[in-house]
Length: 182
Image (cartoon, rainbow, N blue to C red; front, side, top):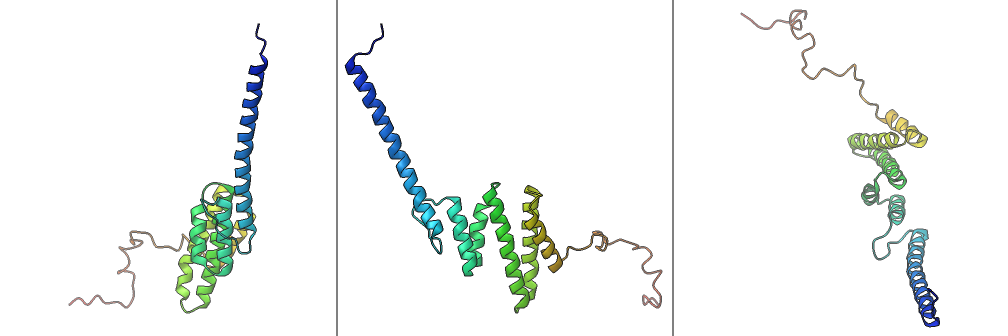
């Protein structure tokens, strides 16, 4: 009537124990890998470990590179992380901060014109962070600081694209101008 024989019960127990041992082994390997990555992140400076490192380690490496002065390498790592996740938002914010720092150095250096595109890129980074999370006050504050360093052009002062504002009257209303006709 469905009673298990002792042999069948023993086989079932052995199968369950084998499955539990296999699951424990998989979890142990996963835990060992996470501990290696945590140790790599906690190292001063963070170090890359073999295999594909997680995004958190990439972020820590980018932060360490930015702190050590390797701004271009840090920007590359931050760009690789700029997804829609919270870590991507932090990477976008940090890269914008790094661009502002580079702009300030360029502004004080021998090439002050290089600061303009860096500040524009930083402002776009802050705006992207604010589009995804309007409550991000740090990005709002830093965008305001970047705006003070390089204000956006006033739309009312910009010439129209066709350049025809009062084009018909330009010559007739100018005083003291002779077109040089005979």
